[in-house]
Image (tube, rainbow over all chains, first blue to last red; front, side, top):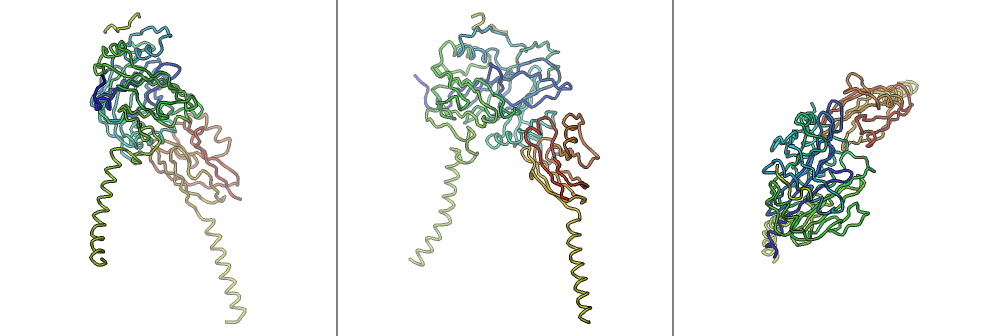
Length: 358
Length: 135
């Protein structure tokens, strides 16, 4: 019936931050254009996790204007590949959990300072009018890189970047060139999906970054879709959300076969498992209250990480690290204590989507 | 030495000592202000008037900031200002990311001034400090 535990542990988790009034997978870090126009309407994100590899799909949507705009997204690991994403994965997930809405399929377009070093650039690529850079570094290094590459980070960014860098020093910076998009003939609302392949042991969904640059009372709204082999345990509240938390468990059920088939038929989505559990979490929170991330445990152990949720500082109780450190400490104590004890004892004793037109 | 002479010498020594103390308090001072997570530390200062104060402004953040000090009218003008940077004015300092800049200011009149970062949304985020100039 289900896959072995190892496979379950590496369950597919699909994340979609989408639709509704406002959404973003990353914090907006512009504008930088000559006219200051806000031309990146939103970014949407999908991530899937199977066999220790996370598939992360983000869509940058063109909203007109000129100049450039961008976002920065914390990642749980270093991507081994960054390519153009599939055409309908994100929309298909929205349709699955919001069937009442008359969803019309829309084909996606082709589309001096320097006291510290900049972040290390691990990968650079251009997809349509979108320049993607994968960075590794602490909050200062990533912030400095963004600053030196023309993006004006908001005042809360130093703290937010440190919040993520302490846990995972990998970030994706996306710079959307609206002039290039217009030159390519991209229409308003056209999106550019990006698919990242990320080997990692700890899938989590960045939520705090959604409030970057917002005023404390400003509302952050997003939909987060998770696709896992079994029903996942989540933190905060491990899947038992209340509206007061700013997180609402909107959907939790076995994924229908038709959904999985549709997802699997999209570009780069062949990893989608035969059976899965679909969860939808609605984020509706004031920016100042959204000071956590969504930790996922799809292993069946029911123990999402407080560190991955941002509730505990990195290194406080990281499961693989803490016991090793403890054993090393105990070993060192034994090395010191045994001779003393011994001494004492001696002395002392352009494809057609499967649901088009549906 | 006569008793009168000893008294006179003692009085002269005391006068010299008092003068030295006063002289110390009136000499130039150095104050360090650190910016971390887009907040001034310390957020409140008191300085004497008529004394050169050297501010060591340490930007601990990976983003640019400003340190502009003045009265309400000064800040109102800067809130809608379009200057990309500040140079040559001791009360208006641009602070690049992770940089340290020194500036020396002598405050002639007593009163309360504010030091503010006027980059977009930084003031509303809380980048405001208060400086009291003593009499």
